[in-house]
Image (cartoon, rainbow, N blue to C red; front, side):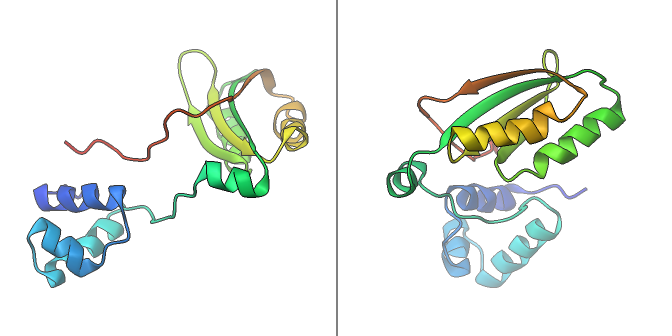
Length: 158
C-alpha cells in the first residue's frame, strides 16, 4: 500500500482544486523539479490515488442552454439484503448514466442514489427500469431537488 508524503499531498491538493496547470507549474508550486513532479504524478496515478481527471461542467449554464434538468436523491430499500442481492442491485444502478452517485448506507435504507435526469419522463423511465421491474426493491423514496447550495469534489487531505 502506497503512503503519500507531504509533497504528494501538496500535489493532490493542487490537482483536486484545478487539474489544468502544467507539470512545470505544479513542480514550481510544490518546490520540486519538473522531472520529480512527473514521476510523482505517474506514481499517484499508478497507485490509484488519482483515479481520473475530468472537467466539471456548470450545471446552471448548461441548464440555461439545454433546459433545466431534474436532480433527485433516492433512498431505496431491498426486500432481500444478502450480499448477492446488494451486489446485483448496485451493478444495475451504476450502469445507469443518470445515476451520478450510488452509496450503500446503514442504518436505514440500503442505498442512496443521486440522479441527474433531463426531465420527469426520464425519471419515470429510469424508475420503471431500476425500481419497479426489480422484484427485490421493497421501498423507494425520491426527493426532487429544488436548489443546490453547494457542490464540491475535494477530499480533506490534512
